[in-house]
Image (tube, rainbow, N blue to C red; front, side, top):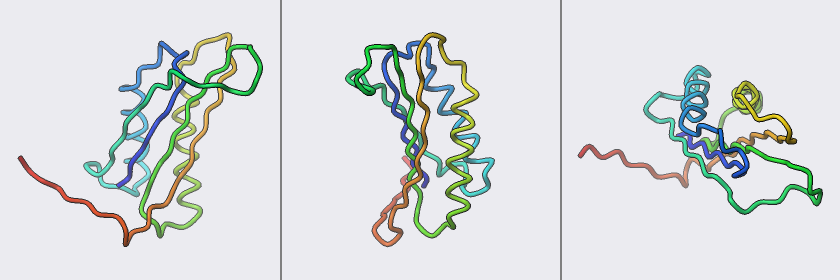
Length: 119
């Protein structure tokens, strides 16, 4: 824990998903809430998407951070704010409206199972 899922529109061809995930993982580690080896992140490019009804160029990046329940609201809010800040600091293309968002979801601790296997 945590699991970070990034979804982004496919009209952001210059987005380096690997570099973005590294920056996001570094921000999560710096928060002091997680052990380095527990942070798992992945990115998915969405080739089918629609933002509103306008034909003007629009794009999005959305982060979904899933963490075990029990952390105070202030910590969850700080986590979403620090991840949004990482998104805002990226180099984005000119000429399109870009929507950046982050949500923090809680996973019920008693219903989460995890195993670590060394191969």
